[in-house]
Length: 422
Image 1 (cartoon, rainbow, N blue to C red):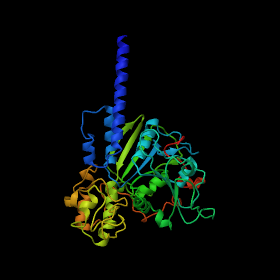
Image 2 (spheres, one colour):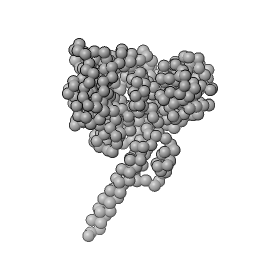
Image 3 (cartoon, helix red, strand yellow):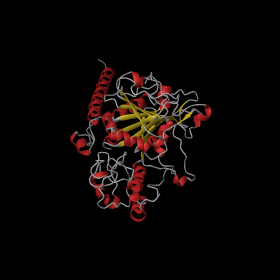
Image 4 (cartoon, rainbow, N blue to C red):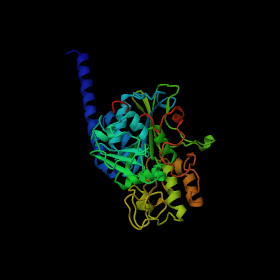
């Protein structure tokens, strides 16, 4: 055997060992929901793991530690901000590594949400296939009942499906009470019930607290604009489309100083670049303003020690549905959730507004402390920027400012991020 052959064999063996360790670490990550569990699983030790294992821990452990109630979204787009061509072709905007990343996000979610347009145009599976993990519940948001009954989410039996519809179909027919095995029809009473934060609370009450909003661009944009997202993953591919189906679009601010500038992590995903935006401070502002100060509540003794610090549930004066502003009579599983604030954004008791993991001091240090202590969070921004305020609870009804409607396309018309085959 030549020296080159021996070197090649050693490199292959090292790669195989790296892959095996990464696979083992991923299996451990799937069961982690607290720092204590991460410590027990040996995931917080540094310098002992292979490069593949370290990458998985660095990228996904923060999401694992977000706790039982967290809402996050994923989009893949071109450099100029499009997720598909003008004809709707999205196979593929980003590379294979990003599709693997998407499947890992699915594996870390209780539910994966898509709009009706994505279900119609892409006929996605929304299952976990490129890595180990349990399939999330597939949630199709379809206020007008327009998704055909022969779509794969209704027929393939690969995972449970929740079809969320309004009182009637757009063709005037009644929504069927039963579709197929593993498919549940949930009828919501009105447009307000389809607002992003209301939908998250509805899912949380059904035991689906970890929610991945996967598509399409309209749905992700609405969740972002309504401050219903704790994390947003945007993968940018080195490709230019010129025009096409846009990714994130919402009514933005008039001046740059009011733009949303959340903490961000960047990493390479093959030839693409992944941006992970931490939006918890934005969600926290809404939750505190809506659930505490509008009801005249204070922070001291208000149940925030058990409610905000990690567990997502409180007792005594915890909040019944997170952002409704009502005070619960007792402990409620989704307290301060809705999805509330998970992952210990604010330290125990909110004493001094200590900032938890993943949110840098500069995000909350000045604005939040001043707002809470002196002004009760009356519309002030958390961090160096904010989303332009919108009418509360804008429903996911496909009737908003979707630029594709001018071209005769519907709500979320394209792009399950997974592409085909899905």
